[in-house]
Length: 303
Ligand SMILES: [Mn+2]
Image (cartoon, rainbow, N blue to C red):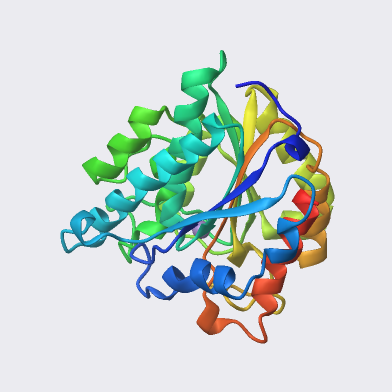
């Protein structure tokens, strides 16, 4: 895959109406609300254009009754859609759904890299209030949206269908991953990330050093030994005072203006291959503040 400036790539939006990774399924309605209310519409006329390709829904055939099989079905279709959009020279913008969709998004990116790039190592900046690095063994809630990063790191979450997806696509290397904004986690997942040596910027460090500094450092690290990188943005990384419409709000997060500036700094970087924005819960939103935050962040990166 040749590095192409994003301006010459068309942004393709792939919605994922998935909520089975969380105890409450409300996030599954996020992408349709954003699409129907036209929150990305003004970007459509911008340079390169933004095109809503599809919203992936759970098919009856892909759902054998439990959350893991529902997510496995969505994951396979999402990975294929993301891989296809990269293969076609587009910039995939994935809109969740709960964060379990990350397994599909980044498996698709890795599959495309493996097929077309000499160097298939992928970097990933993971913005989140949580660590999302549980397995079925360590998770108190057993909710799969708390596990996607462990899965992508090849740590094994204990579901063969999901673990196999990550192994088949190639796995992320710990040194190519940084978490930013974490402020709520359990010991089992923290131990996994510490054992693997994954760099975690807790919210205290972000506040002390400033998001701009931390973000630049994280980007340098994930890009240092990989040809390309992506961003997985869980909206709960933001402060719930500014973005209340999320699946699992935690006080004391990143400020919207700071994150918009960080994304703006990536505007011209051809190594940024894909962006994922997840955990939009329209029912918890207030006067569309969170929908507008998504709009502002997309505009910062894409316009
Ligand atoms: Mn998350």
